[in-house]
Image (cartoon, rainbow, N blue to C red; front, side):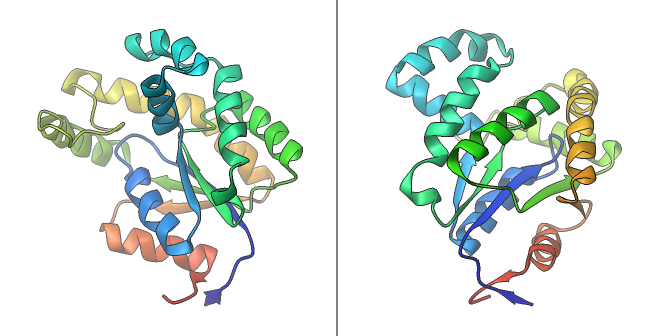
Length: 205
């Protein structure tokens, strides 16, 4: 299946260790759309020492959630930039139903809609194994990411916390007919292929 999109707006969901960020980076390049990571948005604002960055810094330093109004401002500003005209792929936001409703308002203001929500799901036992290995890799400079910053004792709690907050959001998108669940318990290349088949292969692939 070959697809050419005038605009393709996606959300990627998946528990820690699912590989969603890796998939998102590759697929955003393949579809020539902007990958918008909430984590990177926050880090950039902190680096710039902007008002939003100064407001978010205390939350980031102690690992607590950044208030929804701050995230909404960041996401709205980012989605309104020129490189999002063809489309975007969001990771890290929304993370719960309240943020999902906030995103609805942002998109309505911009005259945009979400075409697909991709949920990469992996069994908890597999996620735990991946995260414990990632924890070892996190000791290597510049090799850590959102899913690496864990300790063995926190792995299961982190997975459980994610599922509790995100599963209602998954149900919301399922009810809207936007959700595509992808089995992430397979090699990276196979996950990519399944996502592309579900969305429609980008031109040139």
